[in-house]
Length: 110
Image (cartoon, one colour):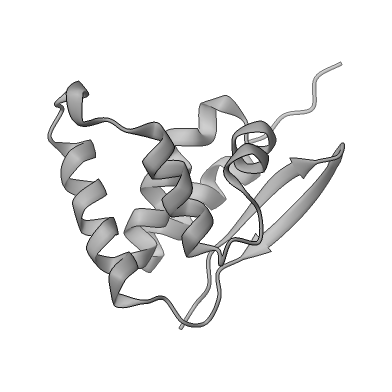
């Protein structure tokens, strides 16, 4: 199965992380719940800490919540969470497209 990758800035360097080959059924259940919460438009259900921990869990805890939060561009946080949710529930192409689209559109500004 195709993997998903994200790049985090850790200690001033870009570090790329790839999902493991095995994603548990428990993560599928969590992904389904998160997708429902995000799509419900009920802001009371939005739990950023839970969603960031979910991303860490999907990537096999190769990084922690703090590294994820500090190493990810703020404008990419929700998109990354949504991409990881889509990846876990089987929408792999959509998940990849969400992240690849922004990787290619980064501009270098002085």
